[in-house]
Each structure stands twice: as structure tokens, then as C-alpha cells.
Amino acid sequence: MIERVFPNVDWVKMWEASYETIYMTLIATAFTFVIGLLLGLLLFLTSKDNIRENKVVYGITSVIVNVFRSIPFIVLIILLIPFTRTLIGTVRGADAALPALIIGAAPFYARMVEIALREIDKGVIEAARSMGAKVSTIIIKVFIPESLPALISGITVTTIALVGYTAMAGVIGAGGLGNLAFLEGFQRSRDDVTLAATIIIVIIVFVIQFIGDFFTNRLDKR
Image (cartoon, rainbow, N blue to C red; front, side, top):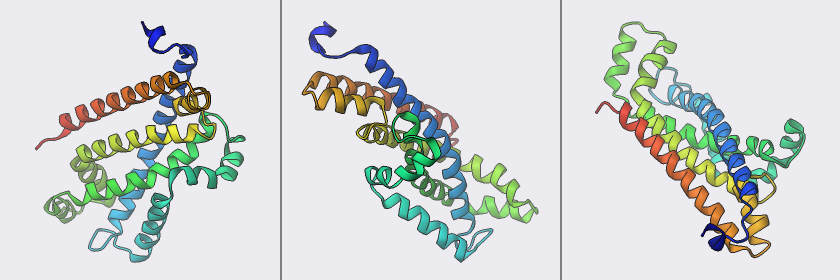
């Protein structure tokens, strides 16, 4: 039955491409979470009327975040080719896509972190400050616990975006399902290959959304 619907699909290649997509997504998500969280905390802490208000630091960080958020991902990949070649040694393969994936997604997540932190009850923050808590203590015991459901929800959305980014990266030889759909499907007019790759991408997205929703609901105390 499957052979009739997908006569041109090489399932060994399809599973290898699926692994590459999942690999790129997971590694990029891990780095994006850490970098985005740090950038988001910096934006929040240095913004107006906050613990470490600093217009210069906030302005510079905000501009950097906005610039990288504004660049279309496919353009960003091309712009980063010299950097990627220097860092990875090649511009092809799953590893070569990681710098662009991380640099493209981290600023996006940073803004989501900043928004999540702004939703924290000011009274909780002021109570911690009045007790003489250090900034590091407030971050660890107030900011992160209070905003954790929103942080998880944000990284879920970002991870799904990263799946789409990996597909775009595949068009220029980064591997994964996007690369397979383009080379084996589109360029050879094999619609069943493109369809199979698309179905697997949709399944991956649904799994990510399910896991993200599960943890968000478990952590939401409201």
C-alpha cells in the first residue's frame, strides 16, 4: 500500500533526512533557549524602571535583537556563509546549518522571554527586593519560576519555527527533510517524495506542540 502511494520514496534516505532534521532542531533549540534566555533577561533587567536600568545597554541589545529578527532566514544563511565556513569548516551538512539556525532563532526567543518576564506580578519582584535578595537570587527564585510556563510555551513556538528553518536550510544543502524534498522531490518531479517529507515534518511539529503544551499545562499554577 505504502509503495503504491509513495513509489519513488527511498525510505532509508527519508529516515536519515528525518534524523538530520530532528538533530538540527534539537541542538539549535538547546542553544537558542540558553542564548535567548540570557538576552531576554538582559533586555528586561536593563529596561526602564527595572533592577538594572541602563538605557545604553538596553538600546544596543535591543537593536542587535531587532536586526537579526528582521533578516529573512534564507538571506541570513547566505550572509553567514563565511562565518559558517570558518567555524565549521564547510557550508554543507546538518552541522553547517546550526550557526544560522541559532543566530536566527535566539533573538526571536529573546523577545518572547522579555514579554514573559514583563507579565510577572511587580509585587512579587518588589517583595524579593525589599528582603535584600541579590539580582542572581531574584532571577533564579522569582523570574524563572514565575515565568516558566510562558518560557516553555515560547520555546515550543520557537522550536516549531526552527523546524521550518531547517527545511529552508535544506534548499542550500544543509541536509534534512527540506534538502531531500528539494533534491529528490522537486528537482526530479517526484511529488510523492515531497509529500512524504512534508507529512513527516508535520508529524514532528505536532509532537513538539504536544510536548510543549503538556509541560506548559503542568507548570501553569493558575
